[in-house]
Image (cartoon, rainbow, N blue to C red; front, side, top):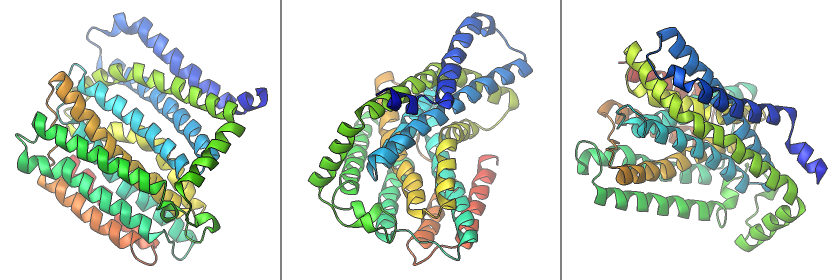
Length: 379
């Protein structure tokens, strides 16, 4: 038991926990001082310190989730990892929504930024590094097509449909209930198939363990792991939760300072969502690129596309629920330029992952598309 606990409580994990909680305590002590008007240098210094602590804690969350992922195996492990990231994102978006500023588009901007970062920047870099090391790379086309199909519908429902049936880019309460229910049902069915009958479609091409397995056999395997490594799994889960809590506690102050900072800079509102997406997905992006360096392109797809399916399938219902409970408007309708970029991104994704091989050239196209997205954000 002690050996399992020591394996979890590494020096890095302890530092991440201490920095997170000490950062919250320090902010609590200085909050009465900083509630007044701050000079611009002090404001951005404080914001940078809070963001640094949140990123460090986010890396801690992802590290524990990744260790659980390896222990539980695929696809359960990737699910733990992606859900941990989505929880952090929902926390940060909720903090901005409930903060002092008026941010009705923060959910749209954040999820749109996540989509562009994952489907273009992360995937592009992964294909570049993998394609330059090998002539071409492969993923399981059936799994990739499932991701593309689910993402296409969820992204249309999230960003295009509110423009057509909504009022001022927002769903009415009745429409929101229908949309969040359908999104959760689709996401739940996707997970059911991914962990059951279609499990082999999300494993590495040529993996000998990719033979079809029954849901009951999978359940028995997971239960065996839970019994054999109960102490380690419970300790990692506890450390994960204790690392998430400082993110929750610091996120409100980060949101308030971010509002002030962007206002003083005269920066576009969408930059707030881009920053949240970058903060949340930086650890998982690094994990995906590491997998690409090892030639595990199916894991790259599971981490990236799976994270985006979880983000859209869970974040949109979460923010719609928050909007209905608090009476705050949630504007989801994207601009024509953003919808065009999403459509082109889906087409490029199909060309990259549904063909026989993907190359570094496909990666370059994805990275360039992300550059075009930044051009639209700052236009």
